[in-house]
Length: 311
Image 1 (cartoon, helix red, strand yellow):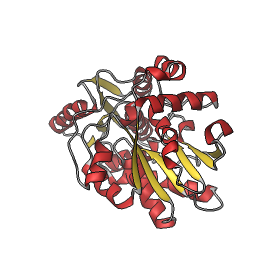
Image 2 (cartoon, helix red, strand yellow; image 1 turned 180 degrees about the vertical axis):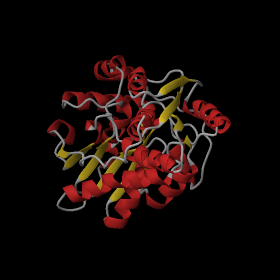
Image 3 (spheres, rainbow, N blue to C red; image 1 turned 90 degrees about the vertical axis):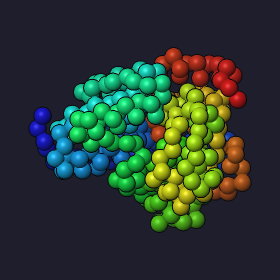
């Protein structure tokens, strides 16, 4: 592979008024990170990190992911001339794994969940003397995600009352929150975690990393069991609130997005699912639609039978 220069950032993603069926009379906007060619926001953090590895002399990168981060790492590695090895849990979403493989990465399925896959990836990277890219642990990711906040603030005539961000490992909210605090400190920075994967919400509440024994959510982008210390520290500084939503609420939000013509994965739907908890927020609310990569069967089940998901 040739090693060309690092590519420039893509054009800003759209910020659009939500359909009335979603907004229900409120001033609601959607930040459409799902429209990127990878179908998710993760490229913004992966590109600068992989570029730094290349600058340091690496010819390959190892990471662990449930899908979107792995695809973003593979995409960045291919653009920059590196090999990518992506470790994923054995039950990872096949739609996302197919995308990772299409981007020329080597996929290794190991572990019952993301954190078990991460342990194996870290150990193998150390043995092979390759950089291990831990999603959420690289400061450059936060800078990359800060561009989303810049775009939102540049695309609106006035700062919104709140920006609502799905929370898996917390880096996305961390990056958006840091930039929003700097440019529009009155805007609320609200995170939404899955009720069945609560480690980041519980860590934020405690003000320190806490342990959790579960990450059993269909929203695989939120399925984090072990907190990232850097993210906990950053969220302690920038998050205004941290909410949790049930599996059923996210499934209903996936269905609501589908009726509005938007294919949203479970993680992306979390922000919409939290909207009933924000009745006290007066003014424009921006929901970050983080991604669209969801298996067809799961998407159909969420749309057609949300009542089967746990409340």
